[in-house]
Image (tube, rainbow, N blue to C red; front, side, top):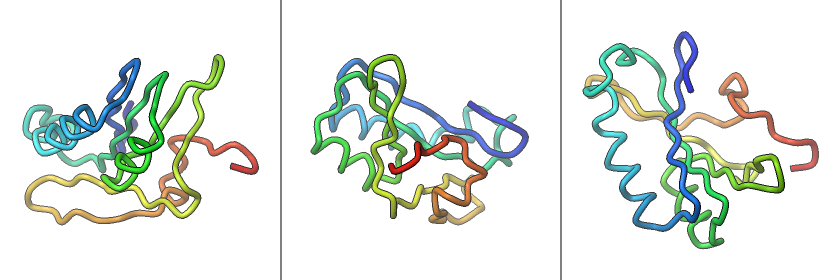
Length: 113
């Protein structure tokens, strides 16, 4: 998912595991190099699954990813309200933590979540 200056790389699985999260962490280092059209975009990561064990939710969140889990016919954002997403920058830019609330809302958090 991308717009003019922000993109979100989403790893989708039926059941998310620590290994899949680690693989997504590895890919973030290659993202800007492999897709040069997005080299100036602010990039974020997310993991999504129908089944997401609680320990994997915490692990993915600690890696700076948005965590999305199927809930009926919709997705639920499982991140803590204090979650700060990690933006991925190209090599010549530093990595930065940005509050999820300041992202221009790529995902709308449900009321009371």
